[in-house]
Length: 63
Image (cartoon, rainbow, N blue to C red; front, side):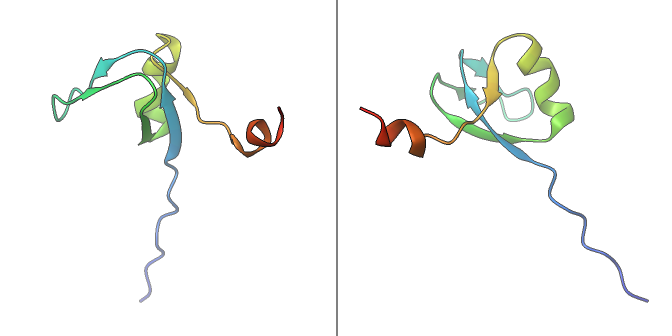
């Protein structure tokens, strides 16, 4: 019997406003990146604490 490895549904988010992780009681500061499951990120997105991280390579090339 073989078992499938579950895919990693986590995504990287950028912290827009400081918030405290409810599990570890660690504070994430503005500009930090965190990887969260969609269900973990939902409330934080709605409350404006995090946003899906964007690729900054395009911004670097523009001047």
